[in-house]
Length: 177
Image 1 (cartoon, rainbow, N blue to C red):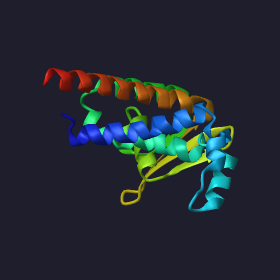
Image 2 (cartoon, rainbow, N blue to C red; image 1 turned 90 degrees about the vertical axis):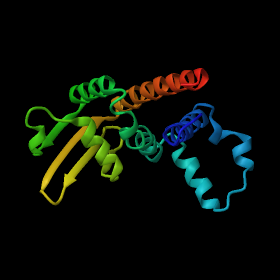
Image 3 (cartoon, one colour; image 1 turned 60 degrees about the horizontal axis):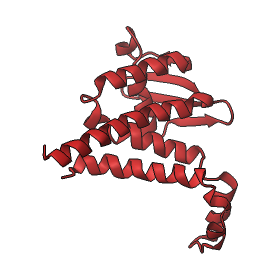
């Protein structure tokens, strides 16, 4: 039986997959989309301008795959998250952190997760996405830039963790574990 945690992870991820498939199929350019009545017609026109593969959907994907499952999956897939941290360390630029716990090595995953959770993300079109994590009480700051050409790979690596989780949970449920 699906748990509350399963539902949170699966439903947010499935919604992201739906958005990806709508983009992949060219849904915005379809006759069906053209014929759809929108409660707020101006939104339909804005969606046509930005398509479904945009900054907002990227942020939603990151939220669904970083923020929602963090506490649920962090121990189960600690090796995968460590590999993700190494990937981020290798592909990000202009990283700054004055968090004391980062003095021996920056925890990119934690800071980027926090930046997404607090919407401290800024896109520079065709260049990079900047993630900022700030602890205002202790006056600590982290910032890094992920090249946009690496954003898809980052999301793809997160998706692999989700696919593994779904596969394992499906087997557990089918076996009655």
